[in-house]
Amino acid sequence: MGLDERWTREVAAAQPIVPVVRWLRENFYASLLLFVIRIYLGWEWLTAGLPKLRGFDATGFLKGALTKTAGEHPDVQWWWARFLEGFAIPNVALFNFLVPWGEVLVGIGLLLGCLTTPAAFFAAVMNFSFMFSGTVSTNPQMILLTFFLLVAGANAGRIGLDRWVVPYLRDAWAKVRRSGKSVPNGN
Image (cartoon, rainbow, N blue to C red):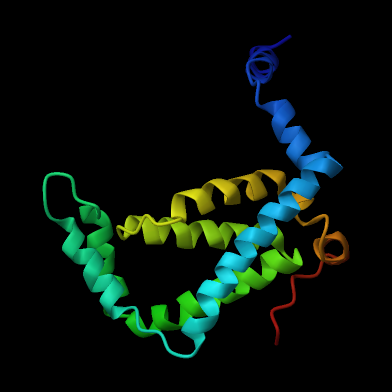
């Protein structure tokens, strides 16, 4: 047994979380729990995003985040403040579009269980962005629940449209790869 094999076995043996991950990824009862988590998160995102579609301006939120950079223990770190000053505020129109539509699309994806893993990923990105901007609220709780969806992978959307969408996309991708053609670019 080589060093790589021994190290792999030792690391795998030292990972008590593996059975939990396997349960989240494969167990039907886990998919029921994940369904409840998914519906809760989807509803939260959808109800947060829908009112913003009628009109949303992130300028106040972004400038407010900059005021939280002062003090011995600032809520907003300097590197995030530089991102807000240098990119987010000058491009606030982009964020005025991305935030409401991102929240709505993540909410729909989670509620329907369609492209659950990408929806959960973008939910986590938004939650972290809000937290980096000094807003705690329900973001930590939502991130924790979202991590369960991300770890579970396809099982998180098992009770949902992913049951059909994921195999279809997997088969379509496999056909493209077998054909040797490049992925269609829409032209």
